[in-house]
Length: 319
Ligand SMILES: Nc1nc2c(c(=O)[nH]1)N[C@H]1C(S)=C(S)[C@@H](COP(=O)(O)O)O[C@H]1N2
Ligand SMILES: [Mo]
Image (cartoon, rainbow, N blue to C red; front, side, top):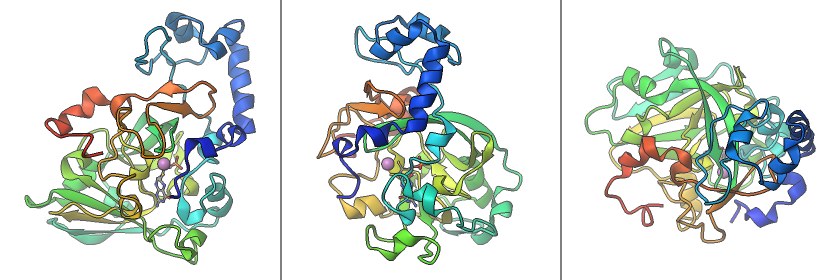
């Protein structure tokens, strides 16, 4: 299958040169803490005091290890290490191939079980909806993670505008289909267009965003411009990019990765260290830019906010 095993990814790719440089700068600023930080020997309190730290711990669960900080991933890394198969399957392909992608004008078809179905211009769809900034941990199914400061609108506010009917239970999202602009769509690496879906209550959760920017700037093409889904407690593949269609349905929609390999990529895709991918463990992750692996947290560390959505569900069966 196409999503690569973590072990297939060489260290040089996991930690691009720019990140090495950035990390050295950080360690330099931390002074004599540098050695302890790298080897994991220093106490959480010392970490929280390191320059540039937010002090927010990641909720480290393993005994005897310090909580690790959630530093925003360097912008350069977050925009050059991407999964966006429409522009190629290598991590550097989207940055290399999406530069000329046209994201204006852009429209989004809203259809299905809604009171106000229409083809909305992007501007109309977002008009009157307040933009928020939220820094989220993002966990890819390939067992790496980043921390991204997003800008966008809560999906629930957009849904409130189009008014789902009482019979609506799911939301389906579809990426643009345009092989002339998206070279990856000229090969059958996935079934195009890319589709994803959420249960309506997941879609209406306040953490769920439609992102239009990151790091205080307009969303780069390789990150899913002009509009992409962000669901921080789920694996990254749920975060469908360059959305042109939002459909409210009664039945659970099909999704691209589930169609490609149902035993590997479930519809729910909640980050779950207790449910391994059939070909690798999901218990730990490599935060891009770091060397040691971190433990992966249930729901990517957002359990206190989202676990109640799944009360009574068997999350091993519904992976
Ligand atoms: N249309 C589309 N959306 C997509 C993908 C893709 O290949 N095509 N890849 C997904 C995966 S696997 C991940 S991890 C995230 C990566 O988002 P980022 O490049 O902004 O980090 O996008 C997701 N959304
Ligand atoms: Mo991913």
